[in-house]
Image 1 (tube, rainbow, N blue to C red):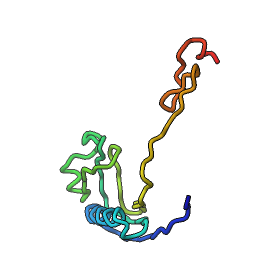
Image 2 (image 1 turned 90 degrees about the vertical axis):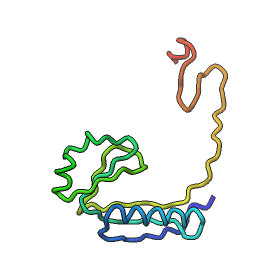
Image 3 (image 1 turned 45 degrees about the vertical axis):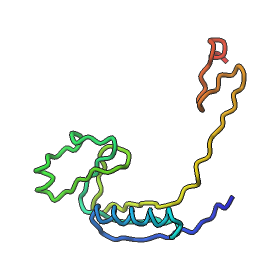
Image 4 (image 1 turned 135 degrees about the vertical axis):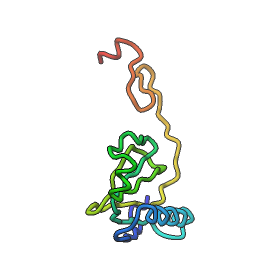
Length: 130
């Protein structure tokens, strides 16, 4: 197994979230096609909130009018999480790496021990006490 791989580190400087997002999407396509090596992007954003796939606007403590008055952008994104703040003085790293192909994971069943789905779930009260 080859552990060492090339990693290109790129500083994007200070950049709006949307612009950095578009660069990431393009670089991800290039990486997926093996046109470029793995990359790690560093960027600093202006005041920005992102709402992830679990995000709820009620968790943003400023109203849309207050956000606008303060020059704070807000974006819905397809990443996990709730509300995330990005802003001046915060260095954000975005890895763009090609992960190995997923392989099925086999978990052997051991009669009587109760191991299933990577967690130990006893099948009987006698096993629970062991």
